[in-house]
Length: 130
Image (cartoon, rainbow, N blue to C red):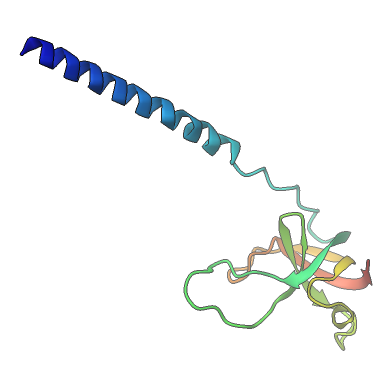
């Protein structure tokens, strides 16, 4: 009977050890996948030029049904900026299409929108397709 207990104890120790060894890569993988710190935002009320992809700014809350409206913006790196056309007739923003690589110049205002995932608004004075 004692021999039987020693064998089972040994099997349990080996099984637990193997399980712990198998979990080690997951512990390190989690740390390696940590997000990079966000880039530094431009100064509020400064004129900036941003190069990136002309795109709809995503909603903050992406659970449940989504509406089809599109807040025009630019994605540069991992940062989205909302765009406002200063021409009065939308001729600046209508000159680019979704997915176009563009360079946008304008007045930056830091604003964290409640609906859209954006770091601020650029009042566009110039846009150039790249």
